Length: 116
Image 1 (cartoon, rainbow, N blue to C red):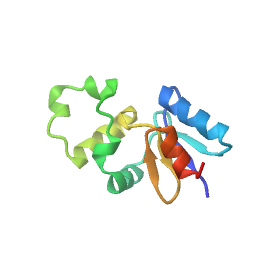
Image 2: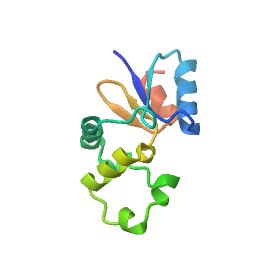
Image 3: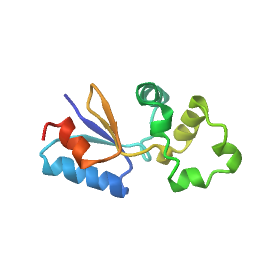
Image 4: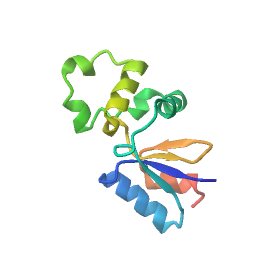
């Protein structure tokens, strides 16, 4: 099973997650969705599995800098369009374990997911 961690290279939370995984001896592939982008089908699948509300990083600078009109009246389609246009609006990391996704980094949640 290939485990993939999706996010942005220069993100403190990503660094913590990657450090935790490395210390636990867990090999992962890294997908930088800011550099490589993210395809609509994958983002829609994530939204179906988790809900767009979980994925959209409303606390981030990129989202907060949007004009108020773009931040209001959010729907699934509008949120997906925003995240596709500016992938840094996707919460990170998104850890794809194959059978499930984990969004964000909490050591206890990672430990539980990997039986540590």
